[in-house]
Image 1 (cartoon, rainbow, N blue to C red):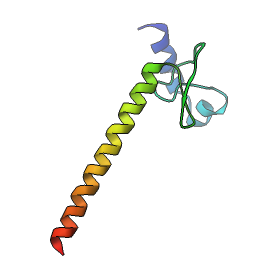
Image 2: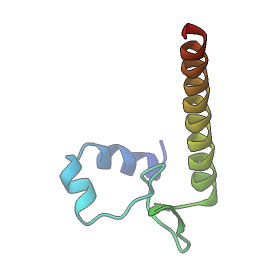
Image 3: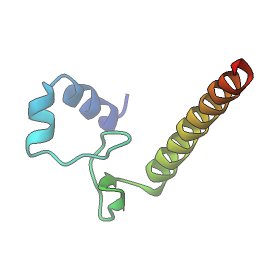
Length: 80
């Protein structure tokens, strides 16, 4: 286990109120920020990799929602 994993484990043990109080962390991996901070929709990311992972996860969630919405719409159209 490297130092970053150890820090993340210790940080995850803190109550949510202390985590958000004064500690600025990456939205995706909860890691420390380096020299560069990436921002998207009021979220801050420590690296481009975390930013891209967030975008991919968000796109997948939106596609899933649209797919379920289309299915439910087609069921209501058939029922009427």
